[in-house]
Amino acid sequence: MTATELAGDKLVKAAEMPWKPYIEGIDIKVLRTCETSGAWTCLFRCQPGSSFPRHRHYGAGEYLVVRGRMEYRAGSATTGDYGYEPLDAIHDETRFPEETELYFTNFGPVLFLDDEDNVIAILDHNAVAAYAD
Image 1 (spheres, one colour):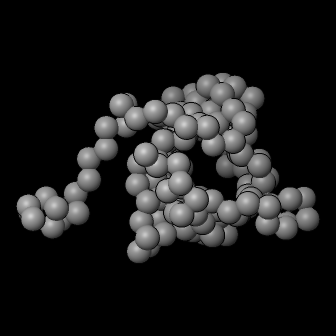
Image 2 (image 1 turned 60 degrees about the horizontal axis):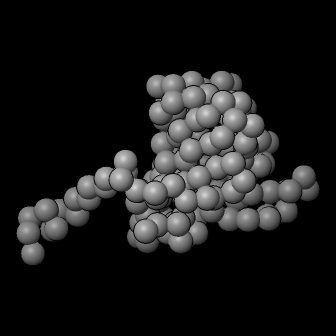
Image 3 (image 1 turned 60 degrees about the vertical axis):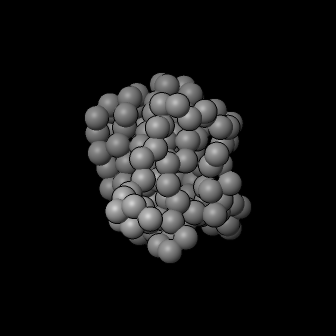
């Protein structure tokens, strides 16, 4: 075993990875998932007019807008903007009015909700891993 393998280093050639459809208008590239902590990191490519539906963070999240614009409860985030989304944050909708790429790490699951706060889908490290190569 090499020192790099012992340290757990990982190098991902994201530019060489194919985009995979996630939900309508949004594609994903999985960069990392962790079975130990439940954290996951990915790139999202969002088409103009696409959105993430209402959801609740069961783990804090961090994002960087690589390019484009994202609009949600904290305001409008544009190219180069960083954001932090705390544990238990509820976002009614996250919209992408223009083509946007988003680097996103979440430290636990995201639960998608209907209008009555019933869980309709869960995005956690296992679900994200299903999109990995």
